[in-house]
Image 1 (spheres, rainbow, N blue to C red):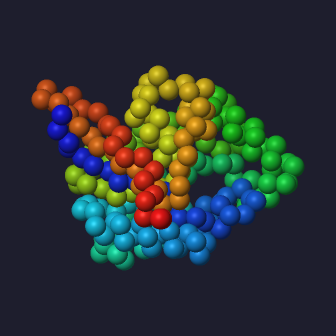
Image 2: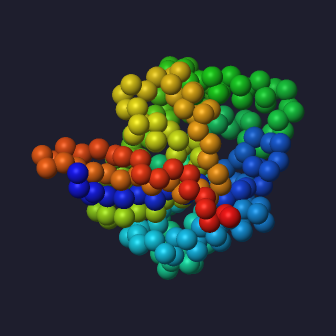
Length: 215
């Protein structure tokens, strides 16, 4: 097998909404701890050879990517392919103790593992799996051989589920995968795209959630 492409994925640093009992919004900034985590992964990124830096448009990812850009001299490209799962807008920023928001959240979570089910404007199983496929195709089709991507835990695990399970991915398998796989803030995950002598290619997981830089 020959390696055609290598993708370094990093989950963003800890955000304010990560640390609070609220349903996280796209606009949540990094905490002080999150900035420290971002600085540490930036130091590590400076020792990795890659061609382009891509980030989710969410604030916590953009702030993490800014530290990496400063350490590596790379310009940040933004792509909505790599944003976190899109929850119903109406729950963003609501307290976990808000009964109405919590009930809607639980119903929406069910839709993430139930093909065809939809709750307000939130992504469902079909949406997020399709977006993962598009994101992987986008990375495969880019001309650069080595790419660094700042993204989010749930969506990154979605891409990995497609890589590892492929078309056999069902709602129940997806639920078990998401609930059974942990991911640290700024953990490093690496995928390689490899092809054989006949040109048949596939993604392969090489490294998962390496957070040795956090000590």
